Image (cartoon, rainbow, N blue to C red; front, top):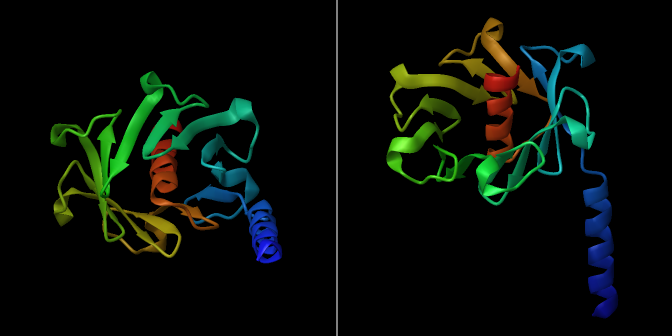
Length: 159
C-alpha cells in the first residue's frame, strides 16, 4: 500500500511539473509578439514573461490580488457563483460582472443587451458575436474560472 501511494504521488508530481503555461494572444493571433499575458501557477504575468517582477495578478482562494501580494488591501476582486465582486465584497451592489454559460455580462445582469463578451472554443468574442473579426483574445490552453477572470481584467485594464 505504501508503495502504491508513493507511486501515485510520484506520478502526480511528474504530471504537475509538465503543466503548460497558458499564453493569451490578442485577437485571433498565435504570434509570440501578440501575447497579452501568460498564466502560470495561479499568477498572471505581463506578455510572455514568467518573472516575479512581471506579475500582474495573483490568485489565492476565490480572490484575485494585484501584483504578487495577497494582502487584503491588494484585493482586486473575488469570484463567487460566477459573479465577480469588487475587492473582497460580497454585496450585490458591488458585482462588476457575471459569467454564466460562457457569456460575460455587465453587473448582475444576464440579459443579452448587457453582454460584454462570450467564450467559445478558447476564443473570447465581443458581445454576442461568433465572427472571427470580433475575437478580442484567444488562449492556447484551459484556465480555471478565476484565472480567466484575471486574464479578462488584464485585457480590460492592462492591455
